[in-house]
Amino acid sequence: MATLPSGLLGPEPGLLSPEQLEKLRVFKIETRIANEKYLRAHKEVEFLISGFLRRRLVSGPGCCWTPSDPFPFLP
Image 1 (cartoon, rainbow, N blue to C red):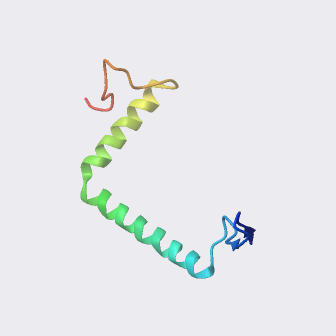
Image 2 (spheres, rainbow, N blue to C red):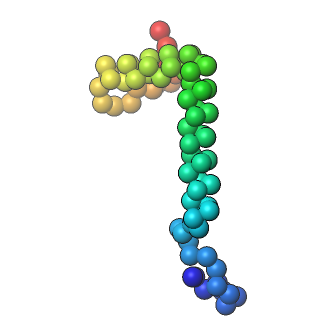
């Protein structure tokens, strides 16, 4: 336990109780499922990401965004 300025003992930073760990695990799983459902329902996100990655991989290293071409992943 960490000692607070008031002299009281507080929780150790970075440590979670088993109940908190289980809640965190469930939250992560539910969030992942919700994200997958969203991405499957919105195909435009897949097109934007794939277009961006294609452009990025073809152009090689360096910045792929310029003020004259603010959306380089769009045709």
